[in-house]
Image (cartoon, rainbow, N blue to C red; front, side, top):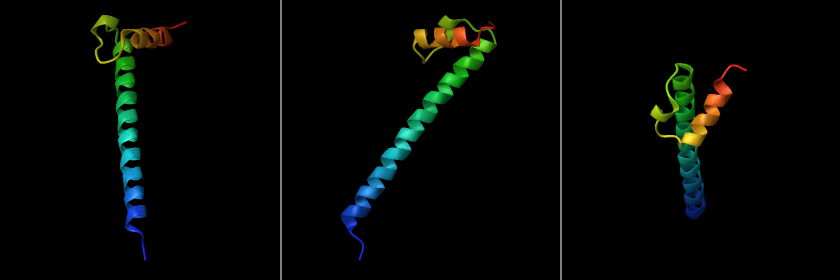
Length: 65
């Protein structure tokens, strides 16, 4: 016979994992969007939702060496 409290822990763990995955995926999406914006020549100051220092690092990585 299954234990309800164990099933509850498993369900709770799965939900927390999904939330973390969604959050990480959202963050990666913002980073990729900022990278594409930089590739299209947008100014660092115009790129929102990421800390300016992070955008500047992306700009440095995107610049031809």
